[in-house]
Length: 507
Image 1 (cartoon, helix red, strand yellow):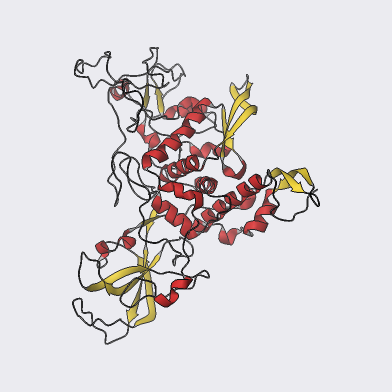
Image 2: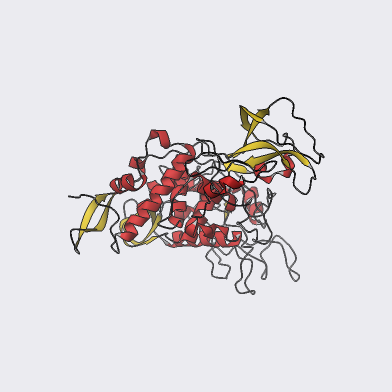
């Protein structure tokens, strides 16, 4: 007989079944939108390469005496992003402004290489819809594993191990998540929550099906899905699940009648209707949790309860960051590239560090940095003066984290922005991209040959350079993993056409 480590009383379980739950509505940090609107595409001006911390990727804003925004007439201390050129050299400012100096404008580097990642600007409901599509596929699959480039693959019609009572390779069919929008859906969920478990009682606020159907719920993984996850992707499940002890799948799902089966008995929500009052009994016409999505309440011998702690955010570890980078790379154009600026702007666009009406922000985040330089003696601040004089800044500067205690903080959105903390990110190419690929490669003039076990690392070293310990931590680890995914997908796609990308030797 299985027991729950939460020690829930049956009375508590019963009470859970009688409560209609909706996703927690969190306060939106600066934006959001209702009804799943909340465009994910709001930005703070033009997207360009800017000065960032070498390790964390936090932007370093310059404290300058500037003309204030219209909401606060006059002049005062402001916080300006520092544009850099292709080599990372700082560009100048226009006097008393955050604008790039006119003479330096030709050297500004625009982040105009989003490509397919522009799909991240979709509405939140669309992002969730694509994530749900992957969940629904997982629920019908028999195996889930890592594929080339770190993407997810779902197996169907797989061999069955009678002794272990589980499906295993080989599988007759495999489906790879290669849709940019589905990849972005996976990216957003993993970056915000650190796993894929959602609440099976979460009402689908955006359902637009048959209006005669009762309340519809978002798809969610059940305990029967946990065993499908290969060890390469088990980190996508809640931390409470230990694959060495399969019963831990039930840490999230309480088996009321202890039969080791999460039966598709669909509990009702006793909220009543105009014709049927709330009476702690199931009455026709009351909404129910349609687990198997057939539009009918199914009767059976079991009910279940879900532990909401299993859908809460977890801190991401190095595997989560590398997997998220793979999802982002899979969503990008195959000829695209990965940079610190692209990653930071993508996270802004997809609100990874913001609460929205339907999601919570990632647990690990950092503020912007502010660089304050001393000014030469003799300059006097005159907020309302007509003839403003640009201060003479010295090279004696201090960099510190931004906070709401600094002057005029509330008037400069860029200094208020939060950024993903990549502290736990590590990436070593040899650990993640050591596989050999089957490719069609050039064998002379107008001739090609199919070659097995071509080392992927050879191509990545050629295309992206070496990835070693000095560049394999924090934001550079993420950028490197994402870049390797992009180049891996490019190789796979191009050599299926085929199209030569580089000269290599093979055995």
